[in-house]
Image (cartoon, rainbow, N blue to C red; front, side, top):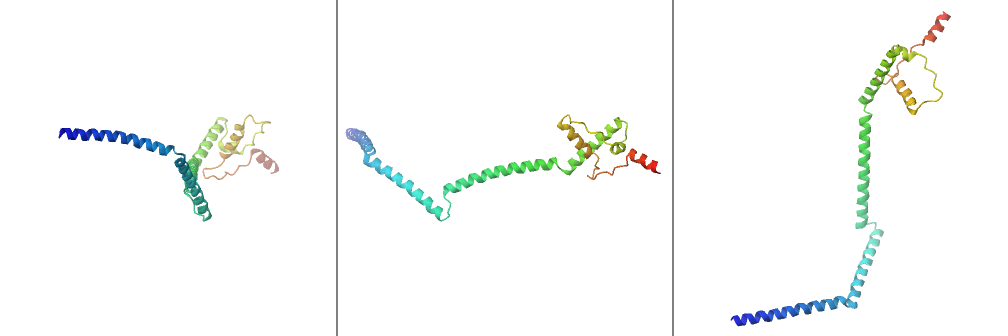
Amino acid sequence: MSDASSAARSLRERFSGTTEERLGKALSDVLESPLLSGAIGRAFDAREKAAQAQEVAMGALNIPSAADIERLTRRLRAVSHRLEGIEDGVQRLDRALAPSGVEERLSAIEDKLGTLAEQLGQSPEDSSSAAPPSPPAKPASPGAAAGKRSASAGKRSASGKAKPKKASSAKKASESKKA
């Protein structure tokens, strides 16, 4: 029996070795065949033309193709990202321009103006009614104009309404001369 099994095994090895070689050689011959490679090339061309015709037909029926949907998806993502950026900017502006923040800044400006007026020897009410100083010929810097704006903003009360101005001392003197 051992002779029979060893003979069967050697026969199987011989056939399998040659069969694999023969099969490999046959496949390489088929793949190298110009007839087969031309047929595969024509099949791929036909597939490409069919896909183009399908896209044209779907476009004529106003049905979006997969490529159209993919482009639309990308554009929607881009718009979504831009919108999120805008929303973040609006939230930052809301926090910066919150009514309590503006009122706090105005009261701080009023306090600073009050301390400056006291340092100059005037009361805050007198400083608002005094004649404005003559403007310089040329502002020293763009910040000088901003300082004037903040000073005028300081004349407002916490409610945002302008305080009524008191009559200037020059005006009082002219009224007293008339009387």
